[in-house]
Image (tube, rainbow, N blue to C red):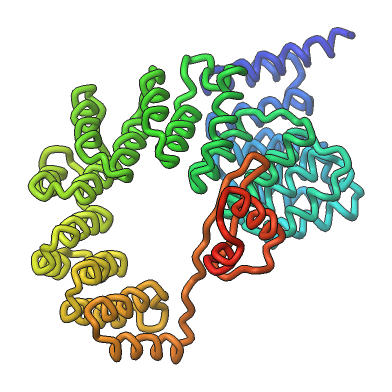
Length: 497
């Protein structure tokens, strides 16, 4: 290595090691004395470092002063802008690069695709896909992975699947990309299916895989999958990082156990997590509240306050939900009064809905209606739906009719099937069948269709998801055989499906 090369490499290392923006400017001055101010190798490091400190003008000055700019320097400018959140400026630089006739390399492509992923810009993402095909980068696994990620984040799962199937040798990032794409598109069934396929391909999951799959386990209450993942984490030490516990990952495990109803396991993970954050406490409070352990949820809240963890809006949704499910009217009213004065949390529609649900469950329909009329957020559909459900529960058709009409006025064209079904059911409960039929006729006239019910069962060989009335599911016969094997009659199974 000649003397100039040594100076170049050393200068680049020093520039990248800068911890303060004043240091960068001092070193930039020294580069002039060394005659390296126009060295592209060093300049790319300068551009990156200036952008790291959000010194956009300094970075642009270095960039513009260079007589020649290679693809590495353009990449530094594009990726540097992206890292500090200037996504639109990064796109402008990319377009300028094309105008100056610089062909993008694979690193450019993966960088700009990640930017369009963050922006949710499917049109420009597709344009880059065209460039990928034209330049022959389709065989590059890293580029394909970036395309899968872009299509997934833009909610175009079918396009992501096409790219995934075209990859001959899928790596860990390929599997993570397609699994995350399904989870981002709220296709929890697809998330678990591809996770099973990944394991069958003998590709070992990492933290990113587990973070994507655990929410799907939580949604389906797929305890078998969740336990296997937790066991894998324990064996491979994935619940730890350099600072101790990986709080986000442990929270995801805790949430999975809580939503599966295994509150002892959830509490065990909670106790073993040393660096608990507010989300850790919220998960436990909400878990106890959801499963009807109201007193345990309130005890957890008091322990949270004793630990000097400040409750947030989500905490109080859990606390008020616990009061609602357990019938703690006095405590619920007290928490609503205290949350802003004592904890600085302004009540939102979610909190008022919990209170109305609490009053409704306890039969205090008049008080619930008065509160719904009085609060500043009374035009919210969810709030009135909660009250309509309470009217149905207690067979109060007269108030239910008033609430139903209110819902129709709020959402005349987009009123979902839920409110119609609740009203029809409510009239049926009190024997007003003609009015129930009239609601059904209105549904038909408005072309409102009830969303089919969905259920699932977790067996040793995987998770099976079924929709109401679906006789075409490829696994239907397997499930019928399994149910008949444990004592159900064939006709009973077919009737229930």
